[in-house]
Length: 333
Ligand code: TXA
Ligand code: MG
Image 1: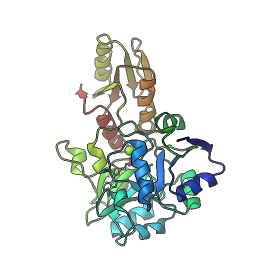
Image 2: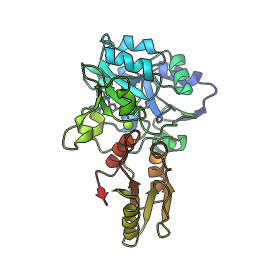
Image 3: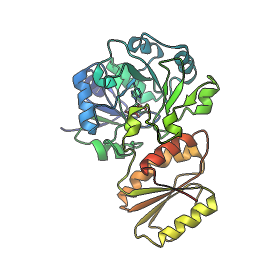
Image 4: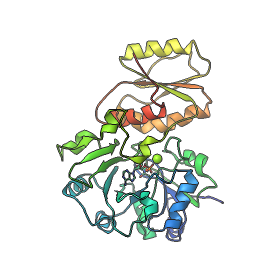
């Protein structure tokens, strides 16, 4: 398959491709998505094939106007309405009961469906112009970090999709917050750019899924049970007091050969082979995390030591992705 890489000025060919059952990668405000017509089972199968994704992991359907959710669900709960009013368009995915038009291929047989109205202008124009609802997982090969720049999409998916739109976006850098609003309780299944605190400011009883707090419970978001976001290099999260974190990582550099360090708030590691500064706020950490993990692989390091300290807000989403990328290899110092 030959992949056409286009800019975002004229989206008509890519929109037509979606309408005709093809696959198109597009930027969003979170990460790049690999889209296909959500109501066309054959098109959906192409997504799973291009990513090498297990078919029991359901997809998010992207819409370009709030009212479209009522075609995908006949049961919009009061919690869903409140969150839509406050956070759409944006990095928030709502899990609602699905209507009969949503094929099982999208929901992996569940009776609920994930719906998101993105704020990215290119994403919205593409969905509108195509005239279809667009199912889209992150545009990476299954298991790899989600792509936040076009170069990383091309690395993973060139030759596996019809179109890649090289555009601007991915300001947030981590995937959307997934919230289950299909029942009476409002539960965050995957943390993201819309934080627990933001959701609780609208719905005080909202809470994090138990699987996000206690690692021994199975997460309700099917995708979170897989190995994920993982670069080829082995990731070690070193967390705690800043001085202890730096002391510990420095001591490890002397023991191992090719070492990368992901520093949070700037650290000096003269002996490390590659040092990437991901910033000094959790928002910056989120924005830079996935591209940094991929950069370490490009530089062929064997170990990535990631500086971390536990924080609320965006820190919850960063922690979730980092812990998974490391396979829960966490050193407390
Ligand atoms: O920011 C994002 O959400 C990006 C962009 C492209 O929109 N998309 C994305 O999709 O991250 P994906 O497929 O990589 O992650 C979707 C997550 C998975 O963990 C999946 O298991 C979960 O949403 N999910 C989808 N449908 C669900 C459902 N009905 N119930 C529970 N979880 C669901
Ligand atoms: Mg993904």
